[in-house]
Length: 373
Image (cartoon, rainbow, N blue to C red; front, side, top):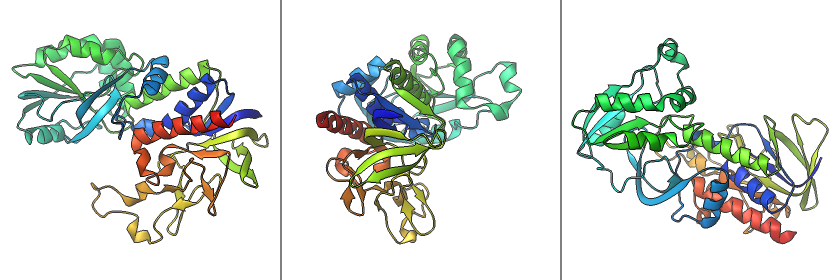
């Protein structure tokens, strides 16, 4: 099977690259295991201190609306982080003290949202907090162990007006309401409808994974990619590459068996450790498809921080590249391969981190590919 470009990884970076190339008339394929960082996505694009028109246009074509306002967002454990460019349903606040009194609403049996932790964090900002619970239909409450964010989102998309009614009844003198971010999986308009229906400031706080905004973003981007004619090989895994000289000729996958994917260009958007784009054992860290050079500390004791709440050093490890994002093998670049997104770790700090790194490097690789044609 031959394509102009083969992309390994169906997360944010891979889908942005795939959509951009398809729009430019390239024939592309994306190989995706189904595991990617969008399932952990907060809804904000870290390190994006601007709202590039190119990104807004691409997302709008997929039915995804963004907003930009430098401020902070409320995290699942009641702390705040700086944020700016975000999905429309992510609550961006000018400052942590966004209300005088707040009602925090949990969901019975839903264990991935912590009203008490949120209350503790908000009270440190001088906000008076009260917690309560939303009622669920009997059919859901019978199996609390099965209650996950996606299950709730599918139900609330059909019953968002009942949520509004319940919140209005539960409100006393609070001027703020915090709800878990489990709305708008299939209908992105639901969060704004809830905001409009409640006579208090509504803030949606992130939950533990899986992320409803992240899953929705992946579904919409994937749909847009396929509408543009892209070939999405979901549930598949790139196994090994055939390299001749300084160029990649083909990649084999688990599902296609002997039928290799050939292309003029290849893009590695396989992610970091969570997505298995990088692997490790007690002695080393490696990239499994191309055998690329990886930047990591040879002292294993330096891989992690004893304080679990601190940033972990291993999350910064990634493949080495030249200035054009061509990854290196024994110090030599592969000229038709580009590494983008979190598989880079922190090896290219000038390109940002998180969602910002995914977006910037995807567009960079696309521009390099189009210029080479």
